[in-house]
Length: 227
Image (cartoon, rainbow, N blue to C red; front, side, top):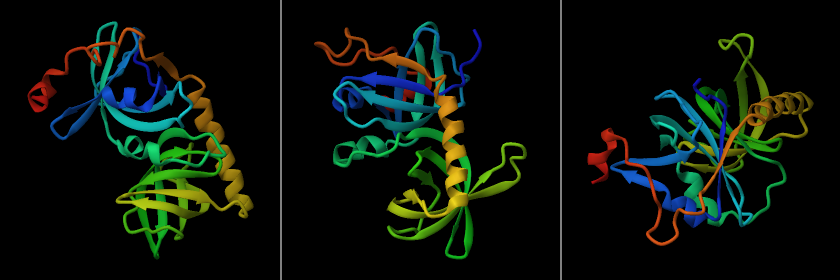
């Protein structure tokens, strides 16, 4: 079986059900993605979308593959649990579909050029890590690597900081910049193409019925930390 590198999508009934399947092991948060055909090389980056049967907004998470369980799925370490913490505080209906991604991005702010990661994107904005020191309302300049030469960056245009939390920020693209609009449109198209081949799975009906979540054994390296 060949390793699967496309994005992943998992559907729960509701947020509390999803939270119940995030296993704490010391300082780490682990999640088991159930799918009999899933095989991901350990250490690989994983982009994942969680959707909910009760129509709560989808959430984008990132992780690192830890251990494959034959014909069952894979344990992964979640890198950003902020989306889970803030989900119930999200009252507005988003205008554009958000999609997880993991791309290097250069952030121009305060006369400096910083290195960050593009964590998710939509036609209206994005979530970015590596942007400590920004505040709501700040104007930043964004640049992405070229597909033909990763060492070369091209302009993604200006964006306004909508929120900032530690080293993460959410930005809203400047829709008045025609060059930025074209670059954002192309970026969203490429990310959407990747998500078109996402592997999907569903929380099983037999789980979380009486005794709570049913998981396969934790990876050996995390058993002691979870104790």
